[in-house]
Image 1 (cartoon, rainbow, N blue to C red):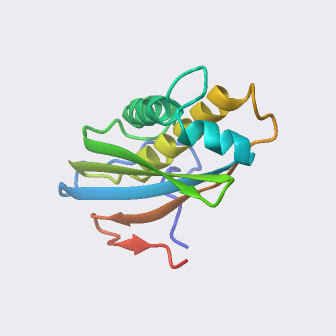
Image 2: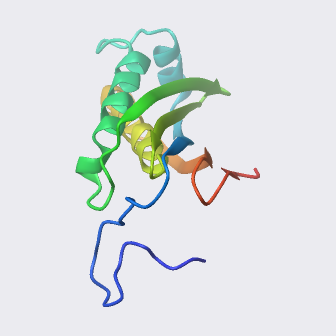
Amino acid sequence: MSELTHFDERGASRMVDTSGKPETLRTARASALIRVAPATLALIRDRALSKGDVLEVARLAGIMAAKQTGTLIPLCHPLPLTAVTLDFAFEGDSVLRIEATARTVGRTGVEMEALTAVSVASLTVYDMCKAVDRVMTIERIRLEEKSGGRSGTFQRAD
């Protein structure tokens, strides 16, 4: 594993200096799973929850969160995002899959923005559904792929 870049030679925290890096197109995709009761998934799918359209509220929450990543995570650079998308898929009768893709043209990657987007979108689904399903779980928040920059492309094998 490479050296941790958020610490200097004395072990003090630091924001990584990206000024010498070239600007390139950076893309990252992250995912999360939310395990819910089958009745809850039906309410989400049918847009029948009294609080409104869960997926559209979660989509907006994820986009807004991605734009705030530099404020939320202490050593992240604030990035001029060029695109953030969130997609939802129903897996079986009890799993909602959320995927977020973030893009920028810049000197550092957008992995944290994609991960923040799926995290906050998942929390939004939880918040909107907690009155009908207290045993929901948010699972497997992870980076699926990234491209751009010196470290090249990463794609999860499974």
